[in-house]
Image: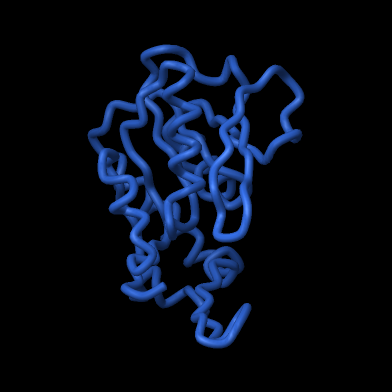
Length: 174
């Protein structure tokens, strides 16, 4: 039986020399890989009291929405600035070269709701930390963060040490 990491394609020297790019599209385009990814992430939530599943644009949507469906929970979108139609709050965070801003609808999370954040990758942790701040500003509690892959060498888990984190695959490098 294949493990989830067996469905990941590694592309050396992309997008630049020395980088080992871990491509999740090879998980998505294999029915067994996709099912294994969703099932693995969902197992991280067993026994956890959760009200809402939220995912960050765009791959967090891919993995988070089926989990929300399976658990019969609402799914909340956390999107890039300017993409949500109703009133939002936003959070700006630093990237390697510049900044990015993400938003959430103001009425997506109610005070006291327990929220799980889902994304495909934890690297430096900047995006998911900004997402957690949005949830918390609305009065929600981030009870778990789950990821398909983690690049441990970029120390995102350390940055997010106050949160409960699980990753299906952990790569030691960057």
